[in-house]
Image (cartoon, rainbow, N blue to C red; front, top):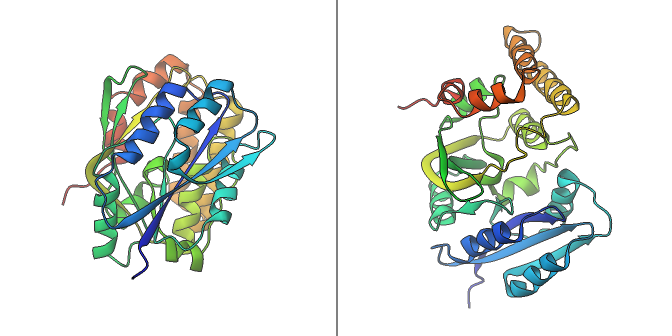
Length: 281
């Protein structure tokens, strides 16, 4: 009998995660239309979790291929690195956050694209942003092709992190790890991927529901904004050297220092899609 192809789904849980949202996320993995692949869910438990969360993991015990537990909270970046280092030889690696929802055809659609485009190493997709009640807040577009993604990189993060589908062979031959960057690890990963030579792509289909919690803008502290500025400036310097693109991190930092209510209006307006600048060919 031929060995079945496998995919990995890497995700994490910590004490602050919502049990109801996590249940939706796990069910969205179970309800995928993907056929012909064994789905291996790798979970990192980041420190002590609540009794309700332990009961949730018991309910979904059959879903998990491997659970890695850190006795103390080590953060998202180091937790994801522990998962990446524990992977076997899976053909594709999917990211997913525990409060988001993958639409039923997400895995199938992203894998079909990568199967037909062997030169692409990582693909994301467009998304629907939802609130805690599941109501639609915004339809988010992202630039589709590699050259457009790289062009937008100095001004914004052009790939939604939990939508990643990564070619397993690329992760093994050109391995990347997350840098602990205080909620900017996704941005650092994209810069590192492009600098390493990975080819990236976004599918124009909306295959993912990304949940914005009430603390989304409250978490944008001065420290986080400064680290984001440093990631952008060092990333742009690494890719282009002394260049006009370095003005964009300054603009972002100035925007970050604006009142949070102003930031929320900008984020949920059509302006952000214009900044992302999805190109329709």
